[in-house]
Amino acid sequence: MSRNIVLSFDEWTEIRKELGIKRVRCKHTNELEDEHWNFKIYPYPLKEWKKRMRAYKGEWADKYCFERTGVYRETLNKLKSQHLINRLCQQEWREWDFNNFGIFEIEQEYNFYHFLGWIYNARLKEELDIYTPREKLYRIWQIMSKTIRLKSEKKWFNWDLEKLADEVIMSIC
Image 1 (spheres, rainbow, N blue to C red):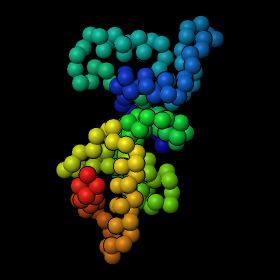
Image 2 (cartoon, helix red, strand yellow):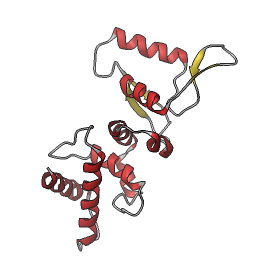
Image 3 (tube, helix red, strand yellow):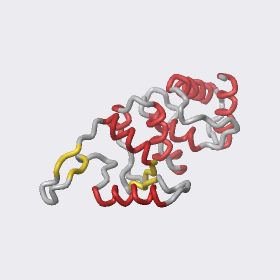
Image 4 (spheres, rainbow, N blue to C red):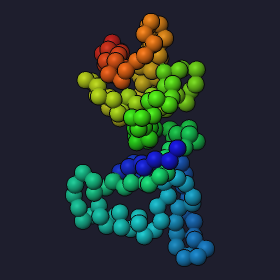
């Protein structure tokens, strides 16, 4: 699904490095540019981004919006750093996605990525750090999934899930 993804320069650089993106010469302009990938930035916009970071000191100065790119499953599977996976899932998630995915169906491993997107966008009392390890996040997902399956309620509202997530996080810590 194509989404606008906002990344900082450091996050973009780390993702690029972990994926092993190589620089190649363009046949038409003879400039060095990244090989094709979903967060590719052409030389001129990259130069403008760097210039903007030097000129402005603010919250959005080092951010870049990758328009209509989305996050590919292959990208998430290749990344080793959990904080980068967490950030990409957080950026990929949209509130209306909740109706489309059974994110608490543990049989489908990819639902874990949707869960990460949801939990990092949920309004929790105990905010999760973006550097929270995969094992802890996976454990929260398992406990929540099991609790949802065992409860007799058929319909779960977002605020009920947020309350459950708060309880699970408090019980794990």
